[in-house]
Image 1 (cartoon, helix red, strand yellow):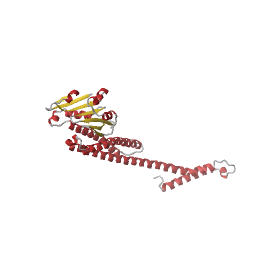
Image 2 (tube, one colour):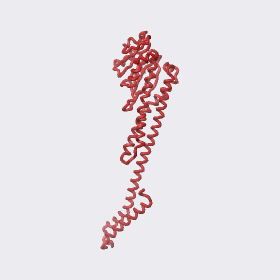
Image 3 (tube, rainbow, N blue to C red):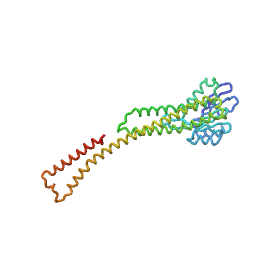
Image 4 (cartoon, rainbow, N blue to C red):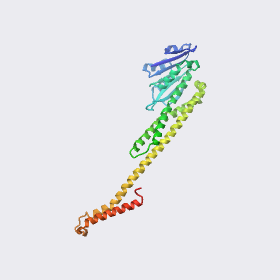
Length: 318
């Protein structure tokens, strides 16, 4: 689906303008949005707008790393949005030329819808904002959408830190920690390249949008720095929780092994005694004793009890 917005020389805002009219002299600037386009609409990137084939190829090959490329007087941006539920990265591309901006996305984007609604307000044109400011608003909206996912992860980590570890839930807690680490890794794969791209943007002198909106793009870069620090900090928290759970599980396993070892040690001499009197030799004096059976059983009980008391005093059951 193609959606167009155009602003004329006399500051009139037009919606759903045919592509053929975008090159008219009365058009000051325009915004064309390729939202979930068909194959025929994708062909317009080359046949009508004459964008570079490599840039068009990047649009169709998901998922590219966030980047910015320059083709003659057109700058091609690859940026990432985050799905609010799965936290998976989704690609949003846009072409920025001296006269307009063309956005391209294969999946619905709430951020683009929000920016489009703001652009259609009369105040946008009245304040003298143009298509370059749309580029800033798009990137800013996408970056701002990273924060809710990260805040949600921090809330989960706070709940994990406050939750009491028991033998029953330690495995579930460990699995939750690994899931959170996987989510943080996905966020990091998006935030770090976006941060590097914003650094290139604010450091470049050949991008017109930067000259006009340098302070705004610097603010986005600061947000990405904060996001990167929050991700690294949360990854350290998950590492500490993982090590804590692993240590707790190892200590419990050591306690179980120690208890089993003590029990085995107690029964070793008892098994030895039972083995001697189970050899069925004919000439064994004790076999003729009237109270031999009870005497051996009593001795075995006394020996086992004595070893238990001795191990208890040595702290083997602590």
